[in-house]
Length: 379
Ligand SMILES: [Zn+2]
Image 1 (cartoon, rainbow, N blue to C red):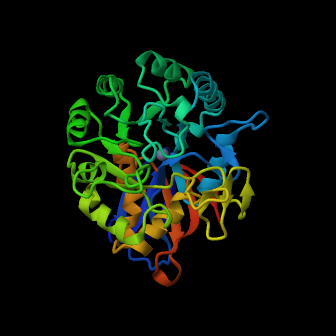
Image 2 (cartoon, helix red, strand yellow; image 1 turned 180 degrees about the horizontal axis):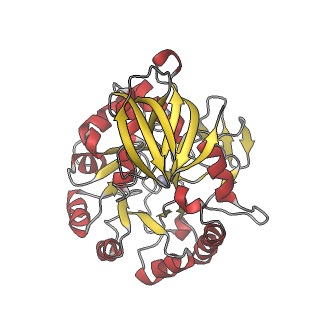
Image 3 (cartoon, rainbow, N blue to C red; image 1 turned 90 degrees about the vertical axis):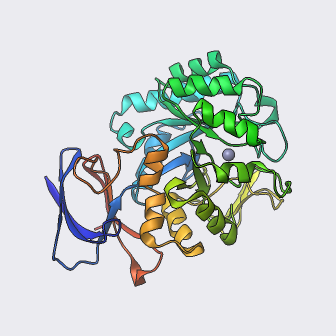
């Protein structure tokens, strides 16, 4: 049994949070004055890699990539996260999912931090712009047989898939995924209002990094961004690293979608947490921006979710509590795991304790708890 006494911005007061086993068993108001804060741990639904380690290109000799990222993330207040595997050949995807499975099978505690895997592509738009940096040669229409093989290779852990619904055959594929309990998100897509409607009717519930994976120029009234913003039946994830979306765009999109339907995610990759420099075909600029080497073209994010939560507050009119919610409870809801996070009796004891220096948008992480275990302590 452990007690955390802290300001809880989501509940607007100081509370004693009692943890027993994996759960929160009591939350009661406290009269103690403290500079500590607590919230449901941050939950990053889109992680390609971090700290020099990739989730989607597990190199030879690169052992335990997920544990390495988990250990870095808990120090950032990010207790839960979803590794992302991007478009690749059939053989490579099978290989990557089986390697991730091996690591998860070998360390059951990892699964407390990683409640699922994300397959982003290969069933996306072939079009330049929406396709982003996904390899054109590997983009293809959805195949249920192929997906079943990935699901088997992963040990049934693919919980989230990003695809383009306008591609022939993909609506039927969405229905099968939803029946199998997989969250279907729209992304890297050139959808129109009709394919949006069909996707939602088939059970799609989320947009991946809305506003990115898109053309530089689009028709002002009829385009896939408005269709997805207007949907009242789907969540949308926004990459709020300060690079992917300008502040006025981020603010407008979050309010158009609505706070109850918005999520922030990092989309961070291997170069996150690494020093500036040229790393083969990707360059990390001193301001943290990742570009295709020698070009201005964005090539992933280097910010972790703690930084993205800070920036969504810094760059928009959201309060600290609203920003925290978009990076925690909203992420859990979008992943179909509404009972996982919250400072409430019966919720999983996955909690981040932190300070707010100068009471502004910055967050200094003090402790990170995942399912009742303290995985990080700064003091
Ligand atoms: Zn993407």
